[in-house]
Amino acid sequence: MSSIEFNFPKAQRRLEEAQEQLEAQKEALRRAQQIVHDREVELMQAAVKDGVVATTATAATVALNPATAAKVGAASVGVAKTTTIAALGWKQHLLAGGIARGVAVSTLFPVDSIKTKLQIGQKISWRLDSIGVEHFSGFRAAILGQIPYGMLVFGTYETIKAMVFARYPDAPKLAVFIGAAVVGDSAGAIWLTPSEIVKQRLQSGQAKDTLSVVRSIYTQKGLRGFYAGFSGMLARDLPFRALQLPLYEVSREAYSTRFCAPKGKMIAPHEAMLVGASVGMLAAGITTPLDVVKSRMMVGASAGQSVPQVVKQILKEGGVKGLFSGAPQRVGYLGLSNAIFFIMYEFVRGLMAGETPMPMTSA
Image 1 (cartoon, rainbow, N blue to C red):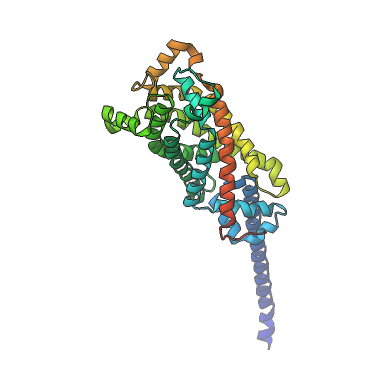
Image 2: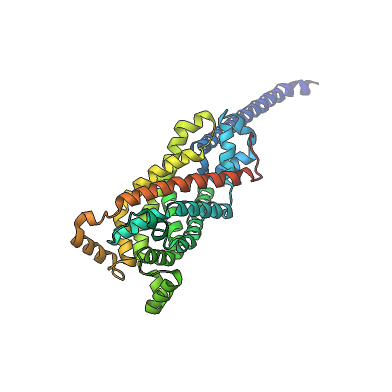
């Protein structure tokens, strides 16, 4: 009896120590849960802020924790739609890019035709009865090249972006956007260059039909002839794409943060159109000299020369002003083209996202 009474205080102390340890563990668990909760909310808010460019990592977090979206309030609607779009696969991005590119090129082809003629020094006929025929030369070659080009560029761009952000969620966005844009456009240029040469030769009146252009190029230079001006194409398109897509992503994010996130919605197609047009005009103006060089290398008197040689020749003939030949047409064309492209691109992706079976926090 005395032995039991003697050990009771010791056992009581051990019980109190165990209770203290349990409370400490409960507090640590509560803190860990709070950290997880705060991180989930941050990811949700980032998804709203980024518009339709939410990373795969963010999409996965929301999909696994749909209840978290409710904690963000009205923004949950935008997050649900955003993360659904983020989950689109490469096939959907290919399709969206191809459709949007086809619509944009078809709508504005006459403007592109006029721009090409101005850049190689041809006179333009403004007679109404010639617009329907003269300014649509090379249209079929353009469509054959531009639709697969849009599919390759934007399919590659979105896929690389998703892969990088899924593996490295904290990767610097701007660097990823630029890198993905350069890789995507390089892949597209391999397909686009031959059709661009054929199209521009038809636009300039050097031939009357596609088949005769193809035969002429192959007879004179073989397969290499279809890649005349490839370096000029890359010199023009890579800087343009490296400006266009990152600027669009950053501008759309800023617009979404300012006008869309407070209302709990993602950016609408017509809003994307305005952002895309602004970005397109800015990038087009900056890269006009590179476009002039590319046109001269493909169809002008400078065909077959290197980029530095062509630049020297243009400066000799027309000075700095010569490097900006057709600038108003290019800025207007690409401003409208980007507006049409991005409204279609976001619209098609939105349609496909609505059909994607992914958990959503709200309707």
